[in-house]
Length: 41
Image (cartoon, rainbow, N blue to C red):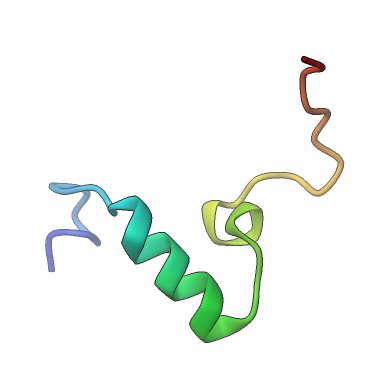
């Protein structure tokens, strides 16, 4: 599949579906650290 070979990227809708299916956050799916500091607006 092209996703595994990094020939194509996931669409936002696909990431949302994965999050809902597995019951996890987008940060988890994307492999972001749990202690990530977000910029203030």
